[in-house]
Length: 241
Image (tube, rainbow, N blue to C red):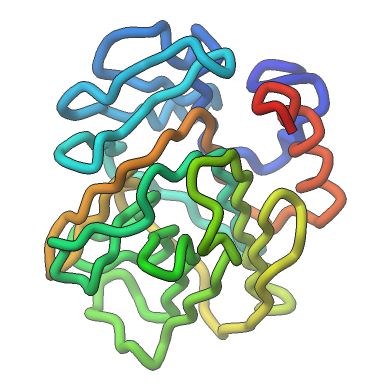
């Protein structure tokens, strides 16, 4: 269709698509980052993350109080998920965060515990997936943290992609199309919660992050490696890759 980012973007199962380069998604000002899918899970931006026309359109979150969130977001599937983010990390961690120097990048949260998230700390960005029901306080035993292998990759453009396949129970993480993490977890996948950007809602605090995020996509299925590469190639020129 070419509605979201380009004619080469995989659109099957796409349930959230935000792109600061598309004026239908963000026009350069205002407090709403519009979802380009028919689901219209728009992001409310808090404390004015700054917009720039660099790289065709980017939003910078200051690591102090900038963040965004959707209303309650019900994305359920018996086949899995994919979270894909174009990201430029200015700082991977916050010294004053009570969650051991963590910072939130994308948090799919009940408001107390994140069910699926991309966070960062001294070791760089990582993906977390919990096996527990969102209505329960998860046990640390029933989660998996998978690195994106980006510890020393600040101040450069990264396409971070995390997938979960409910059939194989595999979790995979990709960094600029390179498979860098692979694990497994048994869950009955269903999440109904808000999506938070540039912070998370946890028992230990909000922990905002100092990052640039121009584009975010969430799918209700696990994309294949070929599809991840296809999406990357359709967008990489914008970031000089």
